Image (cartoon, rainbow, N blue to C red; front, side, top):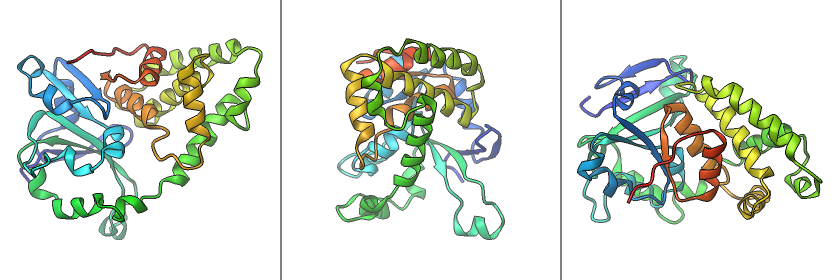
Length: 267
């Protein structure tokens, strides 16, 4: 296969690569950035001054982009090609994998090369994006509810509305801060460890006495909000790759500050 793809376990072990290990390729760049969905990553990645920067489109871009095909092609259908742009996500076992006994999901990194759209079912992806298509039926509510419960367990609360009733949050916030300090060093190339630290940062965000935190708590309380953990996932991806991030979102920036991560301004 000419298209560059790498499959990894959640512990960062390479299972298969078609054109070399892309995790290692990303690490070889002078700079690495996970980009938020509202950032013009395609324009920025094409600038000569950013040729030595790896742009990572993580789960935030994957889940929040609409239509999804615009990650891979422009409005006219012309393929987007950037050798310094990588997509990061997860692959659940297909039917043939299950039959062969390969039951564990894998992490997937792919390069936005000239072969990316050639091997994908772009017509199927366009149909997926259409109103009433499969995207509208994409139900992730169970995993979202599971994550919400983990957040509440960390906070020791039954609902986030209890935060507003607290006389002070300093002791709990300090406990979370120390946990981040202790665990951050274990995040590199470790998916679940980086997820745990991002969750701690998200909890600190909920406690923060600021309008951004109030907005985050309202989003958390909504019964239907498929992108409630989008900022959380961006920070998790950046921790996994030991990268900086590019975002204009105040919540993302605050969580990055909690994790002592670098943010990069690009225009």
